[in-house]
Structures are given as structure tokens and as C-alpha cells.
Amino acid sequence: MNITRLSAKDDFPGWLELAREVEPLFGPMVADPIFQESLKVAIAHKMAFCTADENGFYGGIVISPENNEILWLAVTQKCRGRGFGTALLTEALSHLDQTKPISVTTFDQTCPAGIPARKLYLSFGFQDDSPAGLNPAGIPIVTMICPCNRSLI
Image (cartoon, rainbow, N blue to C red):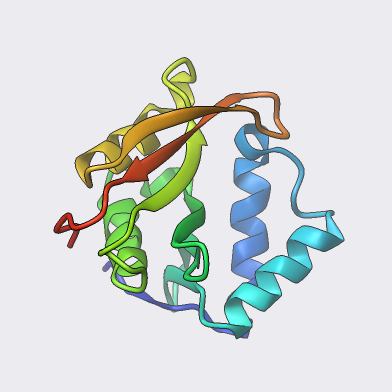
């Protein structure tokens, strides 16, 4: 079952487990106090959404309404390809201003492990905008923009 909802502080351990799983692609997070505090703030300010149920934590997305931006999206390996990313992105976009461009920084086209994320964003109308260097894991990233006045959800 795919339950997408606003994240609560009780979800924090699940977020850390997910972060631990994706650190090879995103870079160190779990031991970083800044990451942990930022995640706690996102949860407290209702900017974090997750897919979770009584059996586990499957994925999460963090947004910045102030910057109209998706800050972080990840789904556990065992749940990829099952619609969790689509559900999370749909939920997140419903909390952003769709009359203005929405941005996300994600893997560029040279990262094979990033192809599913890129396909997801492309399917929602995002387009490559500009190179964004390397992420903390040393993987090339790009900023993608979804133009304003598009029907995203």
C-alpha cells in the first residue's frame, strides 16, 4: 500500500535510514548535524512528506515553498519502480506555487543510477536548465526547472 502523507517527528529514524541507504549517491548525510537539523526543521515546518505505514518507511521528499523548490527526494531500493516517487512528487508539487517555475537539482544524464529520478522529473515537465557541478558524492548534477503555468498534478 502506498501511503503518502505529511511527515511527523516520529518518522525521523526512517528518514535517517533512507539517507544512509542513498549516501553513496548523495554524499554523507546521516552523521552530519546540519543535515539532521535541517531535516528536523523541514518536518516541523511541514515541508517534508513521506510514504510510510506500520511496516516501514519507504521514501521521502522535502520542499522549500519559499524558493519554490524540491530539495530532496529518495525512495528505498526495495520500493523503486512501484510508484512511490510519483506519489511523493505529486504530493510535494501540490504544496508549491505552480504559477511560477519550480526547480530541483538532480543527477545529470551521465549518472546511470540517476536515470530513474531524471525520468520522473521529465515526466512531470521538468527540463534541464543548467549544470550544477558535483554533489558531495562527486556525482555530476544539474538544475531542472518546470516552467510556470503548467498543469503538474
